[in-house]
Image 1 (spheres, rainbow over the protein chains, first blue to last red):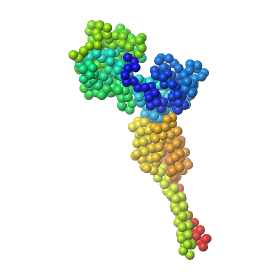
Image 2: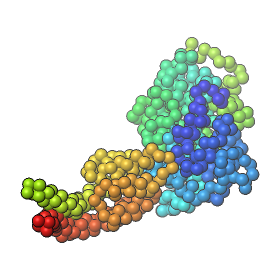
Image 3: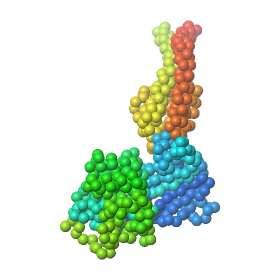
Image 4: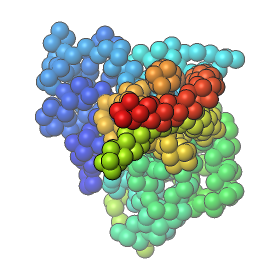
Length: 339
Length: 173
């Protein structure tokens, strides 16, 4: 399912969104790499006095100053402190002061929805991270929305034009956010194929990962009837949406705390469908967390979608019906759901 | 006879003109310094309350502030958003150099502004505000001394222009 319709080409992502935040000479050497090597570019890492690294398909590569990919460290281009300083300036649009909140979290979302994480010297004030100074490591994570990632799943989570409460369970990097984003988009736009009309979706995007808002505007397509609460704590966000935006569906990422569970309970009792994700590799795995366990034991969710990394990013291992525990993906084919 | 008269008038006119232009530079410097201070105060509030990223902040200031100094801010914003690989201090320095050539500020004023630019955008809010306040203080000092110089020099250069013109004419007769 990866590489489905509508994926932005890596050249245009690099040109428009990534290269402008890099110092000129680094941008030029990345520019001169043959684009076919970069199709699955995931990360660009800068560390002072260390080789410039690209992570492609989960493998590390170094690049030389003139833009050749190498695996020999002494041929590679070594990133300088100046490079890091400049990149940091460009990321913040030369306005470090306007990113203080993001600095505390350790990452900035840039135009295009890409995430730049940084490490450095953490300054504490009242036991709280005040800021990070002497930025020493930067990790530019290329965001790739995959339009159509939810095609396979959708028939299983909609019943008689009603969205079922769904929990997506997945280990890191297996594609849960990508799946959630595409679910939100399709439900919000409506799906003719399944006869589903578009519905109002409220999205609580605490870590700016789903819609990837940049200056308040979603950088990823999350559908035309989606209201995004960007950077808002999940529990608070769910309650805010419930009261003010009258959503049909509320989607959120990575639940786990007690207050998240309470807010989800509230939403479900109010008749709003919930789609959420949780870190874990199986239903048993996430039951170890008390907050989620409560929700599972009381059957708040109708469907569990379990992703695994084994067969490539975004692969669905099982879709469980919570009432019976059956794995629907084997027993039921794609059929007319909204008959 | 007529030719001599016309020539004499031309000499007097041009030398007074030179005097007025030099006097003008003394006259305009305090105003420019005043306008720079107003613009920097605007920048302070954009950063302090608006949390506005620098390119937008500079652009909005260039629209609100006096035309006299607007170019400096508009041009910095332009460099920042259009050229790849320029940090804020480099962009500021480039546009400041152009501004310096076309305005009446003195070498000292220019140096204050260069020093101010070194930290532009690259630190947190508190630091930015400190940096702006420091530049404001320095510019205020410069403004005071420029007013003093204006009083001293403006009239003198005007008189000097006119009188030296007359003197040249008298000598030539």
